[in-house]
Image 1 (cartoon, rainbow, N blue to C red):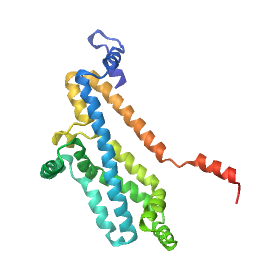
Image 2 (image 1 turned 120 degrees about the horizontal axis):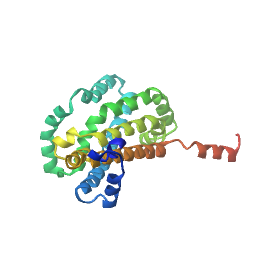
Image 3 (image 1 turned 180 degrees about the horizontal axis):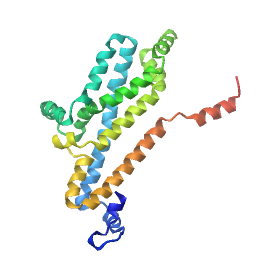
Image 4 (image 1 turned 90 degrees about the horizontal axis):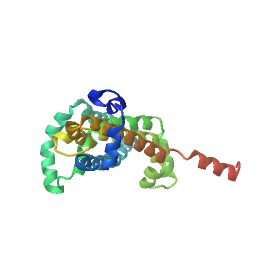
Length: 246
């Protein structure tokens, strides 16, 4: 992709004129909608992660602790969207979005509802594998025995132990949302991928440059998410060093 953007066209050779022209123009004119679309995709990624984690994590923990016989049912429901093509999902979601647009408006943020369904299978597997590696039932019973409420058990006991699976689910959700095109295009919403398609019809070289920048942005964003959720080993070591052995 980098080599393609550096081509000088029919004259042969390579130069960085297109990169310089893009940055000198400040993403104005025909390229300005790409920045708006990038902002839309970031909002959608955040909204999708919030929707999936707030609904999926408590439900999975509740089923695992209180209703283990419903685990297969929940697994089937969560994995089902991966077997349905995106265009079929749009056909089923179109009447739903007609009602949503009437009640809540037709803002691009509403697309997070559809994306939540799309990323559900991947987030489920990531979180479930972490739950299987942690004795959630014993941790819950111990915390409840010590007088902790269900809110404290969820926030202070279970979520920290499931941080790796939750972060993995968030990673996958962000990656899927930033790369999704079909649902947004068919539902007439503007996100990063639909904007890049529009730009590619005007200037394919610049479209590839913007795609590279989008990849770099997604990479940095995932690094930031991983950094925020990483265990603070250095801080723990410092506290241990200061306090000394018990």
